Image (cartoon, rainbow over all chains, first blue to last red):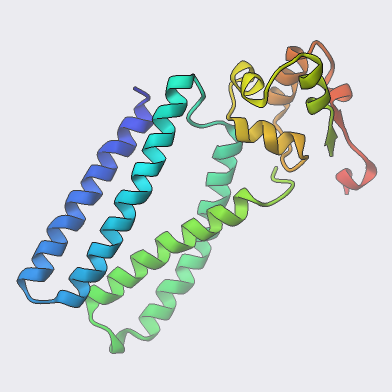
Length: 131
Length: 68
């Protein structure tokens, strides 16, 4: 098995178990709203990662490379853009920190970072003339 | 930038997937190249040109606007 796919599987399992543990902890302290939000995030993550892994394993069977120069450039470019916009998200969250508690700020910040990366990746993927 | 990859691929009776496997990239990369949406590295350009027994200059056509 490709080492990068193995790393993706191990990381995904770590994220799933971490989120599951956090959800259970939130339910135990009766914070149902945060727990439900986290549960929705967990379900979305499992769905997304299943689709990605299914596609990767199918391509691996066909002998198609997991990553090439174009996908690396797209990843690098979108990560750079996402990092830039994530800074603004964190600054905005810090500016409004008195309206939220610490856990909510962290959760919103992380969701914001993931969303920014996803949007940035989609835009970069469809961008013409990528060098 | 325009390319003749699609023409050469048809001439050699190859699919995008066949070419992708032959030069070690993903099928999407070949699709981007054919649409002129991606400028390949010199290494990939030479690999594709070798695959079709032609030159990089013949395969990739640049006009003045590409250099501005």
